[in-house]
Image (cartoon, rainbow, N blue to C red; front, side):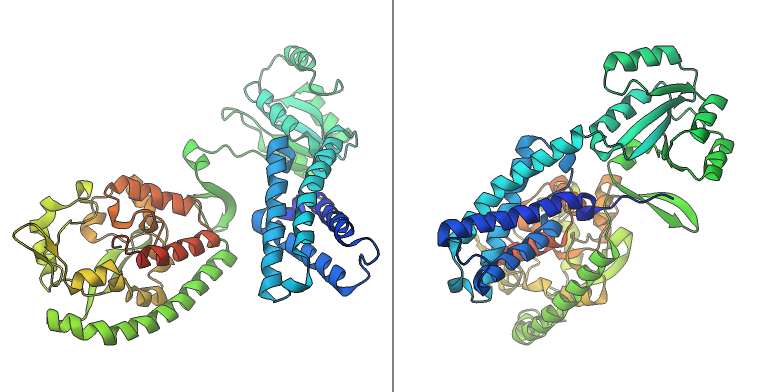
Amino acid sequence: MYQRKPQGIFKHWDFAVLDMVALICSYSIAYIVRHGADKLFKNSVSINAALLLLVVLFIGFFTINPYKDILRRGHLRELLSAFKLASFVLVFSVFVLFALKKGAAYSRLTTVMTAGVFCVISFIVRELWKRWLKNRNNIRQTLVIFTSADTYKSILEDIRDYRYVGSHIQGLVFVDDTDIEKVKAEIEAADDFDSDLNVLSYGDEAYNRILRGWVDEIYFDMADSNYIANETLEQLADMGITFHLRVRLPQAMKEQKYFLEKFAGHNTVTSSNNYLTFKQAFIKRATDIAGGLVGSVFTLLLTVIIGPIIFIKSPGPIFFSQTRVGKNGKKFKIYKFRSMYMDAEERKAGLMAENRIQDGMMFKLDFDPRIIGAKKLPDGTIKKGIGNRIRDWSLDEFPQFFNVLKGDMSLVGTRPPTIDEWEKYTPHHRSRLTIKPGITGLWQVSGRSKITDFDEVVKLDRQYIAEWSLGNDVRILLKTIKVVLKNDGAM
């Protein structure tokens, strides 16, 4: 029976335990230096402080993922990782103490000293533990690799990089016409693997070695042209031996996120530019609903304030709706406060020559006469009207909170194009619409309307999608507020 490898923090639980011990030792050292050893863990203050530090450290495990690729990191990267975790413990602990109004009861100097000592001890302990893991001779499982002349060197190098895991390569089985004696000579000359490594040809000898020997797992890693008979896989399954089949992906898939899942009852490799877990999707949607409700209340208040002004300056509907293209090409009606005259769409074609965006992929003008109250004086000076004020402060965007509640949009996403813009998209451009469009987004807070190169917009949108996280959404929302208050262009 195969035991699946743990993931996340549980994959390196040993390092997590070492860091917890290191933190308690660091706090003890800092407390003794600052207050003496007499009261250490003998009063509620020192005990509660130690417990708080452990809780914060535990939060840090899941927040900054300090053990990702820890077995492959060099000394400098390890030191930076220890410093990052120590800094998180320091900042978060101080924040919690002041949030709970307990800052006066605890020594800030002790907390700072604890973080400094912890950084040093954590780095040293991690390096020593990795060295011990690398050099120990405790073989926990054996591995046989089915391979070919084209691939065996690369897979041996990969396993050498991961040699800490305790797997011992018991044998190499070549499924092609490889010169076995030549391979043996090459492996012996490399001096990277044990001298008892068996190099075999595909056939009865290999089968008997697997049947009678100590073999925990088998890994199939061959060039695309080689084929393993289904009979071989059935024999291994009949033995109950765990085997792994390497999936060779096209280059296009390697540049995306991919994972295994069931589709219509079939095993598939699913590829996408990014994906959300159920938990992440739930939190994002819950955040959208909460933000949409709050935003809708503000929209109703704004309707009472600016609605009459819009109607007086340009009689007609207060709200403007337009068909836009949303996630993966789904069309929807977007809502805005009307900031332009009623004939704005009819006049758009005559203004295309003045568009600042290359190739007409978006539509931005230095002076847009369709905006309510906007005028260009004889001397070339632009006089702003109520429509400009609405757009400068992004007030026209507020009705989109109704779109967020409907589920057509998100608080943070990419800008939804119009139908005519969408029809000009290349395949590369289409990738920016693999998520729900948003009221705000990365490119809006990276220059807003000052960006005139649509490819730069696409680059920022693709970056947002590839690096998506709830934390990034929060940062974009906060930056949006700052950008709007500074009146840094109009979204």
